[in-house]
Image 1 (cartoon, rainbow, N blue to C red):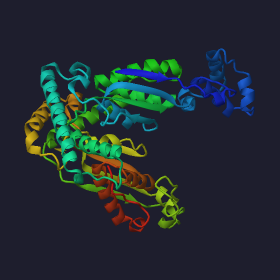
Image 2 (image 1 turned 90 degrees about the vertical axis):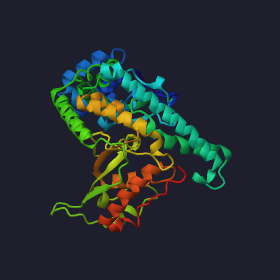
Image 3 (image 1 turned 90 degrees about the horizontal axis):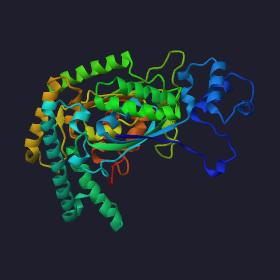
Image 4 (image 1 turned 180 degrees about the vertical axis):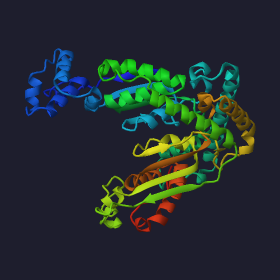
Length: 448
């Protein structure tokens, strides 16, 4: 694992603008909110050559707690190299105010050399060899299926949804994606990936505190590495970023629930799709919603258009019983509202192009390893999962955000399995909100 802070410098076109450190920016804006002086006058009293002294002087003057100004630092950019896919997923779950990107499974090296050691992940010593063996077999299955599916795409191009008159380079890329996206269910969740996030000091402090409160050694190591880097960018506002009792208590309870449900439902058989959607359109009696739904939606040119109060005030909760972790990694990045999963293996998904029977010995061995870790209550059970593991997943948000997600995840180039899940959720949404159907653009995900 390597954590790197990225110091953002102004472009040449901004050379004449004031230059501040993240914490100096926060302190100046805090002073700005408690003064009738203009910003230029406040900056004129700041010694830019000695920003730390200026920060301390301002923070003593304004009656602000450090946490309350932590959001004024602007975006602090951090890159994390070589973390597990599980840790990347968890950071995106925690950091709901962050903007970020993670390496795609289409661009990651898929072999056992791209795994952390069992010790780094907290895998018990007596299960380390078993874990290593299962991971090696999973990578072998991935690479074998990728080669087979890639050849199948060459031999039977009609299987691939190609756009009309596509150039040879586009055809080659889509064929590769056809194989990569179907073989990926064998990828271990422990596989190393990279991610970069940008968020304020306040949100970084909460993220690091949360990571430090988790029982996973990798999360604690990431918290320590992040703190070391962030202290260089925002030393005062990162002081309160260590593990905290309420975070640790909730993490322990969630782990206990995951272990219980994981043992009850552990299976390698595929789960049939189920979807649940709950729409709440209630409004206060003194502030009823008056906008017709068509008026909220019909003026958009595309999914990025602004929606009206009829959808922005409508609450929507939706859930699937069998979201594969491969899809969870991306749907988890829709940051609005609240997402929840116990992250268990209640089933195992493989696309129709892959015969499950050929891989049943691997899946049996993987399930046995997962069961052994769950029986011990080990947080390392997450590192025994493959991306095909199916888990319940719930997301609660508002209708405008749900509609955007549904249009995105069924739209041009969306993964075929995203499209199936969101199409099912849309169908149920339309049962409850039929007037939306004329204005929501459900795509066909072609080409992938």
